[in-house]
Length: 460
Image 1 (cartoon, rainbow, N blue to C red):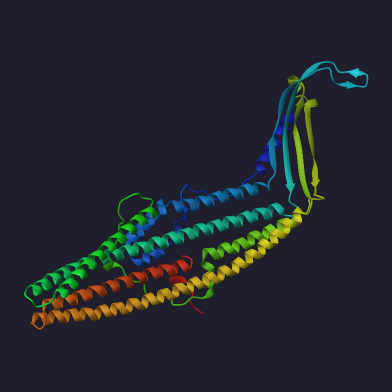
Image 2 (image 1 turned 90 degrees about the vertical axis):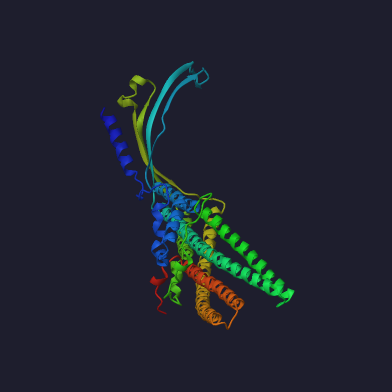
């Protein structure tokens, strides 16, 4: 029984040495990545409906769920690789009955027919001594791959939230366009009615009437296009929210405001916030570890092994001291010839490392390009919005003056309607430029890697 105690103690020690890396326990959803939503930034737009819709996106979007699952999958790969650094303990026993005929002969001695039971119950332990740090480097490589996947998940969040917010403001624009279009159609219907009266008493030609009627059909056709745009946006946004039907809760155009004080220039360090940059950095580190692993493949390996257990031919003697066995040793191994495979692997990893360096440099250039493009688009949209706002203000004054002239009999009701139409047309331009400014702000946010634009260092 003392020997059985030794077996139990040895098994207990081996089991306690087999540990796993500690990972924070996560739920089976994407809610641990709420920080990727950057809700603090989106709250700057002062639109509660936008915030609520983004929370729905966070909770329901399947692309976000799959991105989170990719991270979880790679976390398990890290655990699997880490297990190679630890001792391994296994049990592989044998319980059998051996029946043989008289076919075995040793010199003049013939072994007759016989049968026997075999009881073989070993605990086998093995551990590869990581003298060269090969297994540790492999684990580091897998961890860098995990970092790449995490940045890919972050990029998915940035892209989806930015695209959804852009569609949201385009939907508000479509609503406002429809409202203005209805006013334009109503004004044009009044114009057609009055021109028709003038034509009836011979004060205008048929061509003038036909021109106004054509204008009315054009406005109605444009309204249909606006309806199509609105419905298409709603359908697209419902897919983002993983909903098959319904409507999108949204605010009113008059309540949205353009963000002010956005920096008009950024340092090149802003590129380092982008997920693709961080992915390339992690990829360089990963392949660097792989190169070191490929070099160490030329070195010998050493495995410490040991077995302890019971081996008997009769069950009643299984626990006797004669049935007890123990063996241990070291197994050195080294490939003397592999056909050039290891040398080819090392060269392959070196080529991959050089390729990763080139991709890293290209990513920096592409990042600078996208940021500069975003800045140009934002500055243009902001200037256009300011100009259209000033033009709308002037047209509003013109419209007011026309109403004043009409009140004193110096202008006709048709003149007032024409001035109203001109005001509504410029209103559409102002709406378009305002929403374009919002969308260009979102585009700049996306180009800068989903970072609050007000928090970046702008010192050059």
